[in-house]
Amino acid sequence: MKGQQIGYIRVSSTSQNTERQLADVQLDRTFTDKASGKDANRPELTNCLNHLREGDVLHVHSIDRLARNLKDLQTIIETLTQKGITVKFYKEHLTFEAANTSPMQTLMLQMLGAFAEFERTLIKERQREGIEAAKASGKKLGAPSKLNAEQTAEIKARIEQGGDKSKLAKEYGISRPTLYKLLAA
Image 1 (cartoon, helix red, strand yellow):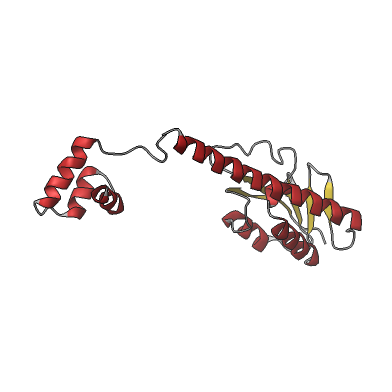
Image 2: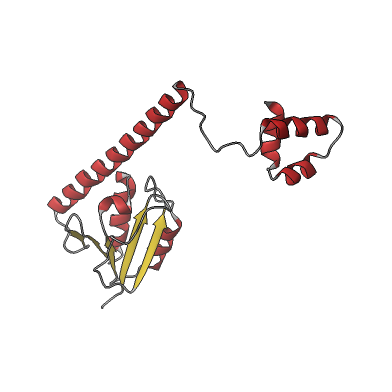
Protein backbone atom coordinates (compact mmCIF):
# COMPACT_ATOMS: atom_id res chain seq x y z
CA MET A 1 0.00 0.00 0.00
CA LYS A 2 1.52 3.29 -1.10
CA GLY A 3 0.78 6.16 1.22
CA GLN A 4 1.28 9.89 1.13
CA GLN A 5 4.58 11.74 1.43
CA ILE A 6 4.04 14.16 4.31
CA GLY A 7 6.47 16.86 5.44
CA TYR A 8 6.80 18.42 8.87
CA ILE A 9 8.72 21.69 9.13
CA ARG A 10 9.40 23.68 12.30
CA VAL A 11 11.19 26.91 13.09
CA SER A 12 11.30 28.52 16.52
CA SER A 13 10.03 31.98 15.62
CA THR A 14 7.96 33.72 12.98
CA SER A 15 11.00 35.64 11.71
CA GLN A 16 12.90 32.45 10.83
CA ASN A 17 12.87 31.03 7.31
CA THR A 18 11.51 27.56 6.54
CA GLU A 19 12.84 27.46 2.96
CA ARG A 20 15.90 25.27 3.60
CA GLN A 21 13.93 22.44 5.19
CA LEU A 22 12.81 19.66 2.81
CA ALA A 23 13.35 21.93 -0.20
CA ASP A 24 14.26 19.06 -2.57
CA VAL A 25 11.70 16.52 -1.33
CA GLN A 26 8.50 15.84 -3.31
CA LEU A 27 5.66 16.03 -0.78
CA ASP A 28 1.92 15.55 -1.02
CA ARG A 29 1.31 17.79 1.98
CA THR A 30 3.38 19.86 4.39
CA PHE A 31 2.64 20.95 7.95
CA THR A 32 4.63 23.94 9.24
CA ASP A 33 4.94 25.19 12.82
CA LYS A 34 6.56 28.44 13.90
CA ALA A 35 6.93 27.48 17.53
CA SER A 36 9.39 26.18 20.08
CA GLY A 37 10.18 22.48 20.04
CA LYS A 38 10.26 22.33 23.85
CA ASP A 39 7.24 20.02 23.88
CA ALA A 40 4.87 18.29 21.47
CA ASN A 41 2.06 20.79 22.06
CA ARG A 42 2.22 22.48 18.63
CA PRO A 43 -0.87 22.99 16.45
CA GLU A 44 0.57 21.86 13.11
CA LEU A 45 2.40 18.91 14.68
CA THR A 46 -0.91 17.78 16.15
CA ASN A 47 -2.62 18.21 12.76
CA CYS A 48 0.21 16.32 11.06
CA LEU A 49 0.09 13.39 13.51
CA ASN A 50 -3.70 13.20 13.15
CA HIS A 51 -3.42 13.25 9.34
CA LEU A 52 -0.86 10.43 9.01
CA ARG A 53 -2.14 6.96 8.05
CA GLU A 54 -0.63 3.53 7.64
CA GLY A 55 1.72 3.47 4.65
CA ASP A 56 2.51 7.20 4.83
CA VAL A 57 6.05 8.54 5.11
CA LEU A 58 6.76 11.49 7.41
CA HIS A 59 9.71 13.55 6.17
CA VAL A 60 11.53 15.78 8.68
CA HIS A 61 14.66 17.85 8.06
CA SER A 62 16.30 16.89 11.37
CA ILE A 63 15.50 15.31 14.71
CA ASP A 64 15.52 18.62 16.59
CA ARG A 65 12.84 19.97 14.20
CA LEU A 66 10.46 17.23 15.38
CA ALA A 67 11.26 17.46 19.09
CA ARG A 68 13.78 18.92 21.52
CA ASN A 69 12.58 16.67 24.30
CA LEU A 70 13.81 13.06 24.26
CA LYS A 71 10.66 11.60 25.79
CA ASP A 72 8.41 13.36 23.24
CA LEU A 73 10.70 12.30 20.40
CA GLN A 74 10.64 8.64 21.41
CA THR A 75 6.87 8.68 21.95
CA ILE A 76 6.21 10.23 18.54
CA ILE A 77 8.50 7.78 16.71
CA GLU A 78 7.13 4.72 18.55
CA THR A 79 3.51 5.77 18.00
CA LEU A 80 4.03 6.41 14.30
CA THR A 81 6.01 3.26 13.53
CA GLN A 82 3.49 1.13 15.42
CA LYS A 83 0.80 2.54 13.10
CA GLY A 84 2.83 1.51 10.05
CA ILE A 85 4.12 5.01 9.30
CA THR A 86 7.73 5.53 8.22
CA VAL A 87 9.67 8.47 9.68
CA LYS A 88 12.61 9.82 7.71
CA PHE A 89 15.17 12.32 9.04
CA TYR A 90 17.35 13.87 6.34
CA LYS A 91 20.15 15.57 8.24
CA GLU A 92 20.90 12.45 10.30
CA HIS A 93 20.22 9.99 7.44
CA LEU A 94 17.92 7.92 9.69
CA THR A 95 14.70 6.14 8.73
CA PHE A 96 12.37 4.47 11.21
CA GLU A 97 9.93 1.75 10.21
CA ALA A 98 8.20 -0.82 12.40
CA ALA A 99 9.71 -3.74 10.49
CA ASN A 100 13.25 -2.40 10.06
CA THR A 101 14.24 -0.52 13.22
CA SER A 102 17.62 -1.68 14.43
CA PRO A 103 19.09 -1.30 17.93
CA MET A 104 21.77 0.97 16.43
CA GLN A 105 19.13 3.29 14.94
CA THR A 106 17.33 3.43 18.27
CA LEU A 107 20.60 4.29 20.01
CA MET A 108 21.32 7.04 17.47
CA LEU A 109 17.80 8.46 17.91
CA GLN A 110 18.20 8.51 21.69
CA MET A 111 21.67 10.09 21.57
CA LEU A 112 20.71 12.76 19.03
CA GLY A 113 17.45 13.41 20.88
CA ALA A 114 19.38 13.82 24.14
CA PHE A 115 21.71 16.32 22.44
CA ALA A 116 18.73 18.30 21.11
CA GLU A 117 17.25 18.41 24.63
CA PHE A 118 20.64 19.43 26.08
CA GLU A 119 20.96 22.21 23.49
CA ARG A 120 17.51 23.54 24.43
CA THR A 121 18.57 23.60 28.10
CA LEU A 122 21.70 25.57 27.18
CA ILE A 123 19.66 28.06 25.15
CA LYS A 124 17.33 28.65 28.11
CA GLU A 125 20.30 29.07 30.46
CA ARG A 126 21.99 31.61 28.16
CA GLN A 127 18.71 33.48 27.82
CA ARG A 128 18.28 33.63 31.61
CA GLU A 129 21.88 34.83 32.05
CA GLY A 130 21.35 37.53 29.40
CA ILE A 131 18.21 38.78 31.12
CA GLU A 132 19.99 38.89 34.50
CA ALA A 133 22.94 40.77 32.98
CA ALA A 134 20.62 43.28 31.31
CA LYS A 135 18.76 43.87 34.59
CA ALA A 136 22.05 44.27 36.49
CA SER A 137 23.24 46.91 34.02
CA GLY A 138 19.98 48.83 34.48
CA LYS A 139 18.45 48.06 31.10
CA LYS A 140 14.70 48.19 31.00
CA LEU A 141 13.24 44.93 29.73
CA GLY A 142 9.96 44.38 27.95
CA ALA A 143 8.05 46.47 25.49
CA PRO A 144 8.56 50.23 25.62
CA SER A 145 5.90 52.20 27.44
CA LYS A 146 3.03 53.36 25.25
CA LEU A 147 2.60 56.48 27.37
CA ASN A 148 4.94 59.25 28.40
CA ALA A 149 5.10 60.68 31.93
CA GLU A 150 2.73 63.53 31.07
CA GLN A 151 0.05 61.15 29.76
CA THR A 152 0.42 58.93 32.82
CA ALA A 153 -0.07 61.90 35.16
CA GLU A 154 -3.08 63.00 33.10
CA ILE A 155 -4.72 59.57 33.40
CA LYS A 156 -4.11 59.40 37.16
CA ALA A 157 -5.59 62.88 37.65
CA ARG A 158 -8.67 62.05 35.58
CA ILE A 159 -9.27 58.84 37.54
CA GLU A 160 -8.95 60.74 40.84
CA GLN A 161 -11.69 63.05 39.50
CA GLY A 162 -13.92 60.01 38.86
CA GLY A 163 -12.99 59.26 35.25
CA ASP A 164 -14.12 55.93 33.79
CA LYS A 165 -11.15 53.55 33.60
CA SER A 166 -12.42 51.59 30.60
CA LYS A 167 -13.03 54.76 28.57
CA LEU A 168 -9.62 56.17 29.51
CA ALA A 169 -7.88 52.94 28.52
CA LYS A 170 -9.59 53.06 25.10
CA GLU A 171 -8.87 56.76 24.67
CA TYR A 172 -5.14 56.26 25.31
CA GLY A 173 -4.92 52.99 23.34
CA ILE A 174 -3.93 50.77 26.25
CA SER A 175 -5.50 47.70 27.82
CA ARG A 176 -7.22 47.78 31.20
CA PRO A 177 -4.50 45.58 32.78
CA THR A 178 -1.91 48.13 31.54
CA LEU A 179 -3.97 50.92 33.06
CA TYR A 180 -4.08 49.12 36.42
CA LYS A 181 -0.30 48.55 36.32
CA LEU A 182 0.11 52.27 35.65
CA LEU A 183 -2.04 53.15 38.65
CA ALA A 184 -0.16 50.72 40.92
CA ALA A 185 3.25 52.15 39.97
